Amino acid sequence: MADQTTSAPQGFTSLEVAEALAPTWHSRREQIEAVGTPLRELMVRELDPQPGDAVLELAAGTGETGFDAAERLGDGGRLISSDFSRGMVDGARRRGEERGVENAEYRVIDAERIELADDSVDGAICRFGYMLMEDPAAALSETRRVLRPGGRLVLSVWGPPDRNPFFMIPARSLVQRGHLPPPEPPPAPGLFAMADPERTAGLLRDAGFEEARTEEFTLTFPPPSAEAFVEFMADTAGPIAMALRGLSEADRAEVASDVEESLTPFAADGGYQLPSPALVTVAR
Image (spheres, rainbow, N blue to C red):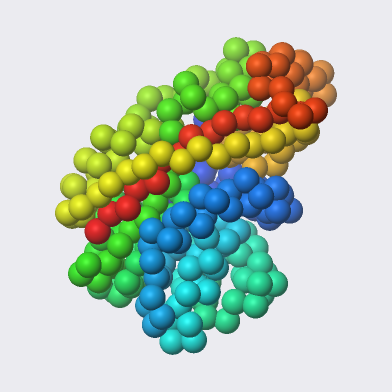
């Protein structure tokens, strides 16, 4: 998640967007995680948390990635599940209770100003968060500060937009119809602000990380129909969601028609299969 003072394209702050989406983000959790579980499992393997470790999850959303890590920490370990949105943190707490997680604490934390002591955690993990932050350089520097020597950070961001139809199909329609402004190029925050691994590597070096490696991992989203796809995006997809929520019924129908046409090349098994490449980086 981004700093709460950051403005989203429609004039909402990033915090306002996160708070607005928190209820539907959590109601869509099973759909989100059905797609995201393989990536989540990869990130936790790369983090390799050990019994007794302290792990910080930033921009935790529903908290699932951190909860997977918490299973490895044992009773003597500790997960700090955090997000800058209180609504997201409250939802993660409920989900943690459902999963029976007993070694987690839940905190509202702005990743650009982490209220933890230096050298206080053994690992940090962040799934699709840094790219949305107003100042990812500050957030990464803060992450490095709170990591103990040798501590590991695992982060994921979305890959290049030209290979990411999951987001680009609805965004293209919204932009072309004047419902959403064209995205600003990096370093402006956004879904693809860290899609260039060289930029991410540079940010990590400047933050004090000495080693980093990146690999691509492609998720596949399976919307059953154009209408279901638009509804899912309106519940989960940040500025795209806010734009869709603000449309009249007629305007939304036009966007759905555009989306249906654009989905045609991705038809499969009675629905659609939309690739969405992600970049997973491990740094220490």
